[in-house]
Image (cartoon, rainbow, N blue to C red; front, side, top):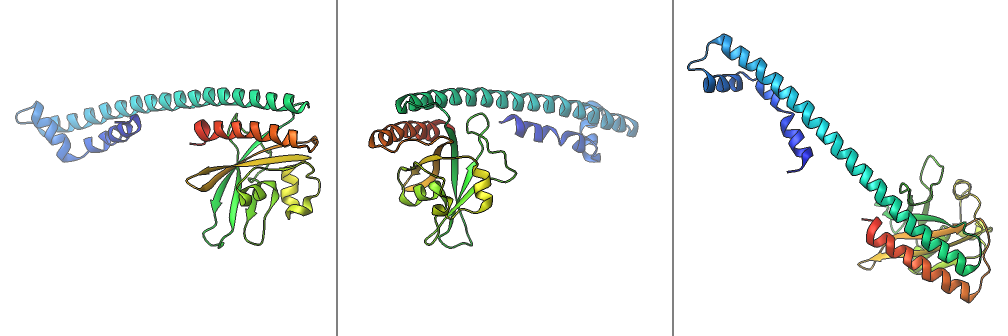
Length: 237
């Protein structure tokens, strides 16, 4: 039984103890037969004991929650170290300074939007690079609309790289999207596909442009594949 279920069960003890039937039943187990005064005493003692039990179990539940959060934070720090190691190898292979940012976009179905899909940026604490925005960055993809490098990647279901993203008109971006994206000169993306469906799209972007060569494309594809494998196997559960 989980600690949270135990807390829920323990939490009803004080309420049960104030029921006349409960206090009377407990009193009969102690006294034979109990007087009204003894029943009333048992009632309040039971309530007191139940309240102490609630405080104790709530304290344990909070400690349990804190330990889980601490463990998740430490695990995310390990994942980020692994990701930073891959980004370092990638930048070394490209012979450039490592200024890559990692973004993850989750595919969300628009139930009232026909074939239109929304790709929403996930901000994973200590793992993905944060966008300082009030609302998540989103791209939409449909039969007649494909937004951003991430949208093209989703539609094509394969690796896609743009070595010069300065022309925002190519991707039908709104001014709000452009503001959220910020200073980006290069972007590439790769989908994470489970059971033939694209579940996520992982992107790497950089404020510095990268020379477009077949060699650089192979290096980018190699390392973004490894990054996607890490996300798929250990992070995006």
